[in-house]
Image 1 (tube, helix red, strand yellow):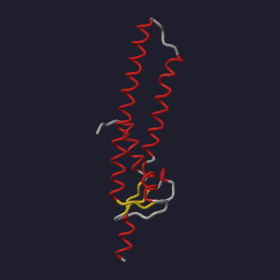
Image 2 (image 1 turned 45 degrees about the vertical axis):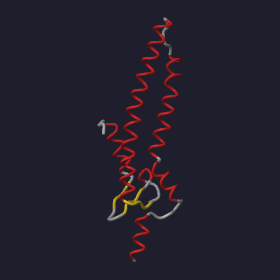
Image 3 (image 1 turned 90 degrees about the horizontal axis):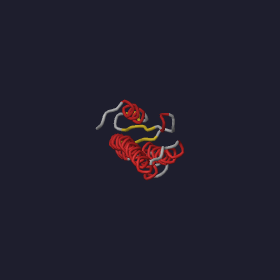
Length: 133
């Protein structure tokens, strides 16, 4: 998608949580958590979704800040007032909070997948390996 050094570091950090084996992938939250077995397909889907979502979040944040600043400038021109620090903080504070919450939601996608599978449930890869034996 869209290339940026910050986004690339985030992508590498997210992908670094997955250790690839033969037919399975081990996921460790923040690379230190308990190992959880995923399929290669699940890993690829999680990384693809992360790339897409974090790119749109980043671009949306930039666009939103630009629009807010243009709106503040326009309002200041119409009211013939100077923007103050409190006004800027009241505009940018909710944006920063929304960004942090959205970023946390994106990074926690593997936990949501595991919650849908059931706590401690095995993945399709483990079940397939058990059926082969």
